[in-house]
Image (cartoon, rainbow over all chains, first blue to last red; front, top):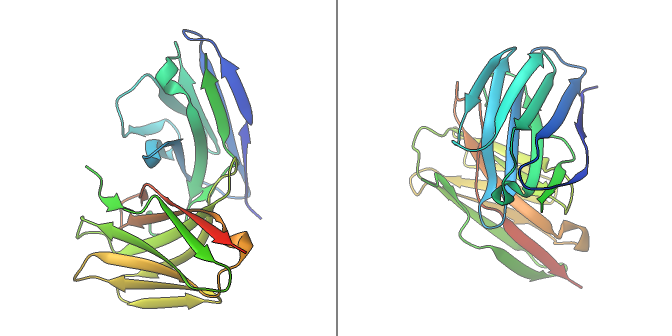
Length: 113
Length: 112
């Protein structure tokens, strides 16, 4: 069966520090991968998605970047965190063209102080 | 541009009664709709979906209704149980879209 791992579960980082959140998927090949952020009053905001290795689509211009170095690995990064980067970050995967359900990881609560 | 809207941030329902969560969309290309349930500090989990070729889909206590002309869908939970207390997200997509567009979510509280 397919599983998705996302870590860490919680993270407290000072302003200006770098960020690296990692997500891996098991049990499937060539998944679509997604990074979402849940912010108060804005629901689940899609940040990045990837349909293949090295292919990244950015949905929102911001202080963050994403990379997909391997088929089932998706990384969310920042060189210098801002206070506004605080939030709940979710990785997800799906199969196919998007008309299928997406499966989410447990999320990372990031607090920038 | 909020293409999927859940205009009620919260809803409170008595246990055993019907819960109705609403969702509106603006993009007429959307042809597949999903509902997700989310508990605090966890990722959302898939609940139920509906294709635009249908106007109703039922799974146990959960039923989703789609009104294409009004660009509106709703999730009915009958009977509501305390474990249904969570945030519910509506999502939409279309063939070839590669992604889901989510609404803002509605926090459902079931009161005993």
